[in-house]
Length: 341
Image (tube, rainbow, N blue to C red; front, top):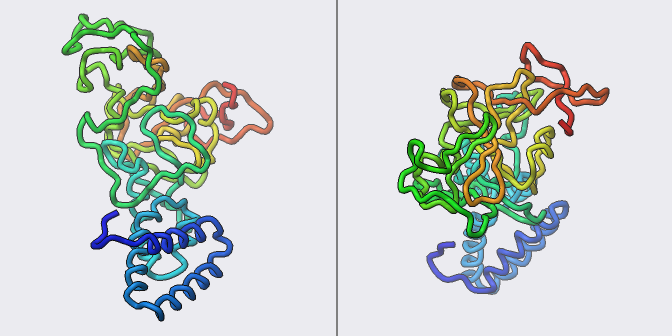
């Protein structure tokens, strides 16, 4: 946090306590604000200079703290005074402009065309790669204006959660043709890539799924299906779209349309089902030296701009209490695949 002059410990405690009270006890924030305002007025009577310094420090802290709040907390704080409302307003705007928080190569904006719907974006923790499950109290800043857009291969996060010690890998400088052992052909749903045990660099042509999202995408809300992932440009057949990243397996959560704010995902979490197979292929990618395979999505045909990206969750098992399917395809079964397909 940058300031024109150093803040005293008392000033920082004043600002920090303010936010702890609001965030921790939103139902009582009106009383708390009144109490703190009373203390501020008493302090102002003792020292106008110190109060002004404390006030400025508080609002500098606000710009740092507010991006860590979830939508409910942010709305509560924004309603306390005009200044906090003005600070929180651009945070919401930045959040809707990029689901990835700057962790992908390109922004992935939200678009909600539903009239009267008050949800500008779904709140969740974003991860561009495989990760372990986070603690419920974990906070991730979003909308601060400091979200760093990755601009080079060196900025990319490590796509491998666990590595195999002393694993073999290629010795290639450039992996082309049939010379690289990592290019061993797999079946249609399994592919091999170079990995952490290989000598080639991140720019290697056999690491196409390891550089994050490189096509333009957007999140659009449908009145029946909820949020879905759409192409924001024409995407040719065979193009890598995104990895299914997060702390949980695809079979565990793909069938849910409720996104829990303490779970960490990427945009693949919002790809909806289509009974006709959709326009995406699910490919299991194994990389030399990586312990776990990765689930990646490639286009199965040319995808037009503004077209929804979908794939099949599995064969439909009709259940009396099954969730309805709204994919709209000519072969729609009317019911989503069960969670055990």
